[in-house]
Image (tube, rainbow, N blue to C red; front, top):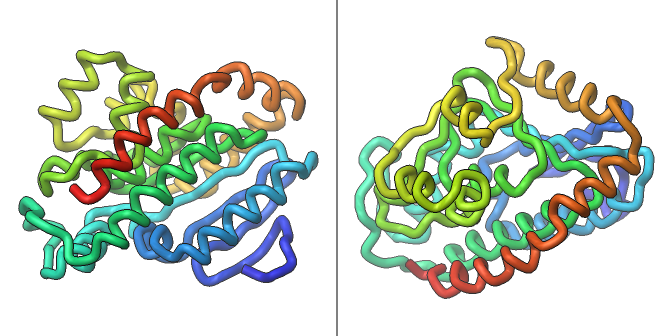
Length: 260
């Protein structure tokens, strides 16, 4: 990212474009590689601070592609921190980490972005496609509106590796679904498809087949153009008024588990 902050930019990990009152942020490389680059993320957080005061922007749409949040990206990340080759189609329990620092960065950067999105004074929307692993699904649950392609699915993969579900997944499921259903999903399920997530209210819209990106932008733009800037600003403050405090308490427990 350039030193001079701009609404639209292109950098190694991200690029952004503005369409009307919608700002679109797209990731260019896999999400875990992005997440552990602390300098890149500090620059992104500075950019979020910059656009927070820009009144021409009502909302931020974060678009993922089929490669950046999935099983292969997670397997590469785990291979690095576990010091052994882990194949995405052959999961196994992780006994130890050889690089605790990277695991700590993963957990803490996810938590940092979650708190930023909860308190961000714009609508934050996510658009997801293909299979997404647990940590990044949790990040999307911290956002205000979720769009997905028909082939979208969540892989609750933490269980397969014996790791606690990072990215705030238990926290947001409890908020959305209640205790019993959260238990059932985290203890007993492996995959959740788009239709199931829509039924649970964990997705807001599903795009048409073959038009994931254009439909996502259209849905987000129409939503933002349906009312005033102030409506979203004040309504989000009311809806999320106590959420950061509650997530802080949760993330303290998450932090103590970061090495596991």
